[in-house]
Length: 267
Ligand code: GLP
Image (cartoon, rainbow, N blue to C red):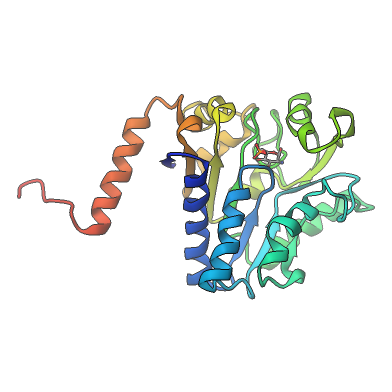
């Protein structure tokens, strides 16, 4: 896993948006996997800026969101569909028909989840999947104990996640207990993953994800099996990483290679 440490959450946002923008420019009809929560907000703001000021074109981009609360309609202020409209889709030139967020009010969830998986594969799979991380180490809503081979399905939220997400609702009792979520297996099929984390509350989950054993108890740790994951962290989220200095060294070497300043050893 490539680990990039930025100074603060603004740095994380800029760097993450850069990766997405490079892909959109290179492949205008790319498929982006998107996440909700506080973490990717800055990245979306930067993508909106790039669209407005630098003409970043989303007209042929297709998106799939990771998850949605069960029972919330698309217009519910706390639904992830609403979040995406407010924070990204309404401000860029994406075709609304190409934005997919799981339907939290589907009637037959089993059939709907299989349909969501089919939609992703019909589009040729996800090129770049953006991920946040829960304080319990979950990705999307794959709570501890989720199968590492899981596909899109219903998941019961843990007490910790309900507590964490209560800040967006009127209190814990208003947080839905169930969500539709892409599975860990679905996420691992994306061609590239960007794992974003900022703030001290993510430091433990990040250490376990990047340097701990692969375990269904920390579903983000399954990303160690993926061949192309870039973790973009701020200093606080990276604080507990034991190999931090090495990750910094790798980035320095990478930058030197790109600028052609990597001196030959025998020079
Ligand atoms: C929710 C979402 C996750 C997200 C997590 C962290 O549980 N389902 O996709 O990564 O929250 O959110 P935040 O970025 O607000 O800390």
